[in-house]
Amino acid sequence: MLGKTAGGLYWMFRYLERSENISRLIEAGFRIALTRPSSSEDEWAGIIDAAGCRRAYEARHSEFTQGNAIDFLLRDPANQSCILNAIENARNNARLVRVALSREVWEATNECWMEVRQALSQPVKDRDLPEVLALIRKQSALVRGALHGTMLRNDVFNFARIGTFLERADSTARILDVKYYVLLPSASQIGSALDNVQWENILRSVGGARAYRWLNGPDISSAGIAEFLILDRQMPRSLIFCAENIAGNLSYLMQQYGDRLTCHDYADGLVGRLGSTAIQSILDAGLHEFIVDFLETNAALGRQIETEYRFYG
Image 1 (cartoon, rainbow, N blue to C red):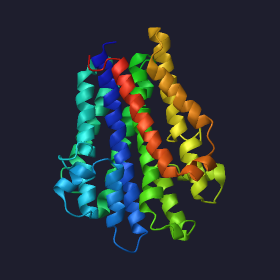
Image 2: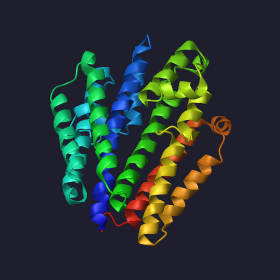
Image 3: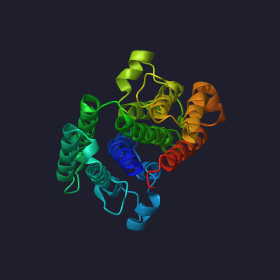
């Protein structure tokens, strides 16, 4: 496969996943803000930080208000990572690699773009936000469903999946960091009713509330949820689940192309580190520090994949 085609598939599904993940980040901020009786400025500053677009936001706005933050993350053209831009970038990459996609995947992607563009043609009111966020996730899921139902399990599929899981791992880590490091009002709140409500909102934002209860019962704890989102191999948005799938899809590429590259070592090393780590050791050393290290490692893995598979060559 040409590197340009591989890169188009990889970025198509990274952008598609990003649109869903930004919607989940907005939902996390929206739900958590509802649990705080005081100003929500700190919450939305944390969400903007987690989305990695604080500098662009501050160039547009002087305050971190809920309305400004939500509109910036949903549809502001000055924000390269906003949902509207992400969906458009996913469609543009799909057009670039259209001959590698099944008709169903292309049509689902095009429909996703049209539906989301229509929904975000005007600023979204608070009362309509849950419905709009649900629409974004639904349209993203339809594209993934078409991929799984109609595509050969070849290099096209593997590059699409690698992009998906790299982006998803990045998002889960950022959502965890928003709660643990930015949004908690003070150390005195840890273990309080407010703390537990916020952790439950984090579970909801990654679609894991019911799954967590299936595995852990009704008790909510910060350590239990952190372990679930970092180290649970059954949770499709956990860090270890994403890392193992990246390594697996890279392994299929290695078998197909007959060449082991440095990125394979990076991916296997990440899986090994996560698999040999206990949640208590992560918490003792600092969850924020762990997340920062994970984000750097995940980003380095993505850059190595781009370089070695010559996405821009």
